[in-house]
Amino acid sequence: MNTLVIDTNILISALIKESVARKIIVNSRQNLLLPEFELEEIKNHRNEIMQKADLSDKEFDILLLRLLNYIKVIPVNIILPYREEAVEIIGNIDRDDVQFIATALAFNCPIWSEDKHFKKQKTIKIITTREMLRFID
Image (cartoon, helix red, strand yellow):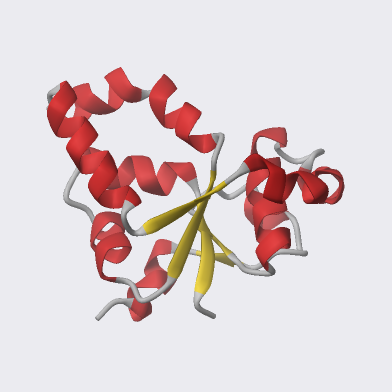
């Protein structure tokens, strides 16, 4: 396995503090993918993240760009063909997770997440942060 979809909460965790998640993002040999519209989620929580992390606007932007150097943002048009199947897999569990499942289907890869909702489906493998530790140098 060398490609994973990264859950937004993992990226937010990496933005808030010098965490294991940040270390993994920067040092992992994995190809990390993020659905494009999750950048909007980060934008929606920007002020909250900045406050928790005690970051200025400029510091937030620099850190986000630094982390995104290690993450490939996947355009909506790539995952759109998998949306219907993703809705069938997780739509009844948590509709907010559809884009992650669709991205995982598009790239035939697991999802890195601590979200317990993902574990309720059995189609896509879910990797926890603890399991990700084995992929860092």
